[in-house]
Amino acid sequence: MIDFARVQKELVECGKDAEGSGIKVTPKSDNLVLLLGTIPGPIGTPYEGGVFKIDITLPDGYPFEPPKMQFSTKVWHPNISSQSGAICLDILKDQWSPALTLKTALLSVQALLSAPQPDDPQDAVVAQQYLKDYQTFVNTARYWTESFAKPTSLGIEDKVQKLVEMGFPEAQVRNILEAVGGDENLALERLL
Image (cartoon, rainbow, N blue to C red; front, top):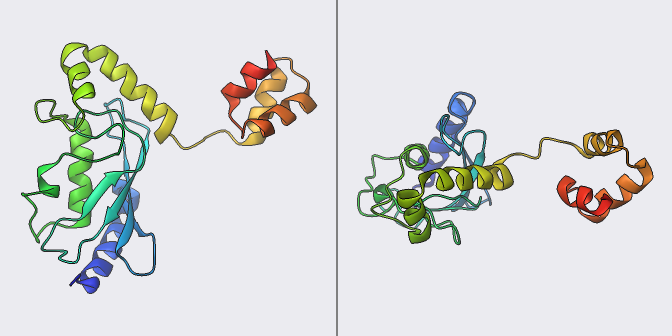
């Protein structure tokens, strides 16, 4: 049976330090079985500046069984499936200990972003690229971070302003931005 008192305590502990670490865990539902973890991309990596969401499901045996974690944010990494978000990390499998917490597990996932293990891959294609063409791996990982893990920084008014400054009529800009769901690049393609 899940120790819900412990889960509550872990959520409080994570909340206290969220400002400093950037690591957060929030409930997705009332029953505390489905949680959402958030980790910032480590500085000095292609993931820097990204905010990565991780779905967490607590098994009945938690904390004696590891939490099930998988990225919901798409990420390009040898130890994370580019398709499903599955994570290849020993502490989420056979190296789990009840002494570990959701926060330590998320810290380990964050450390994995800094130090890929291409010899024990979750995604063979990414691992091959990492080993054979490292610069392309870095560029792809950075592109995926930009595309999927960056909070959309520009509001709709900023996008309108930017495109109007490029010489497009405001009414047309607004209509096209609305039609493409606010995607600035798609709007620009349609305007050209």
